[in-house]
Image (cartoon, rainbow, N blue to C red; front, top):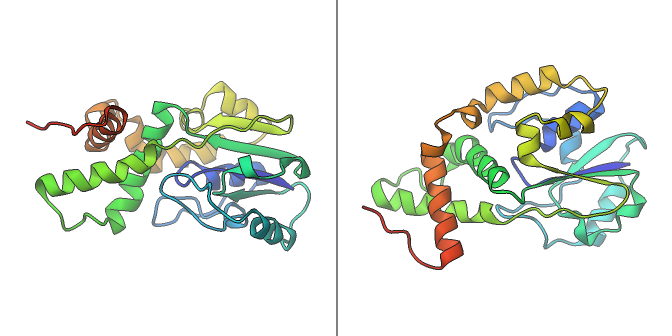
Length: 217
């Protein structure tokens, strides 16, 4: 069995589709509805899922009716697991500013706009709610280093880098990525750095790193 570990909104469904040779539909939440990318899920977190029952997770995997070559996904951070039992493990990390911003921006557009806790808020109240929510996305999904593990930053997938192409070598990634980039076209907007999602992210980072309130005009 092969494992893909990723925090939400970092291409877990996309990777499962590419590596398993499937082409799933797109959900209303902007994600790829791959069955495999949910098989190992036992919870979620707006930050990263590190607090979970490893025994329960392993028991769930044992009950799966999958082949040795299949890739399955989970939101669980794998640093707590014995990863030597898996053939291969891919970890979608979010250690860089760019990866964290991309993840937050996807959640901001696809998830929070549809079921936002701030949907009825306006003005400074809405800005504050968005900023506080963005702080969850500052927490990194960290790499784990072992011979059967590949760590890849979420930004490397979104930007279709050489590292991502090497990871998916021999797979048909073009139609997958063409569709994914259309769905997430806001990530490729040259004005992303002046977008509301970026402003809230920067304000959240400043307050977290400097332990002070952002001062608005």
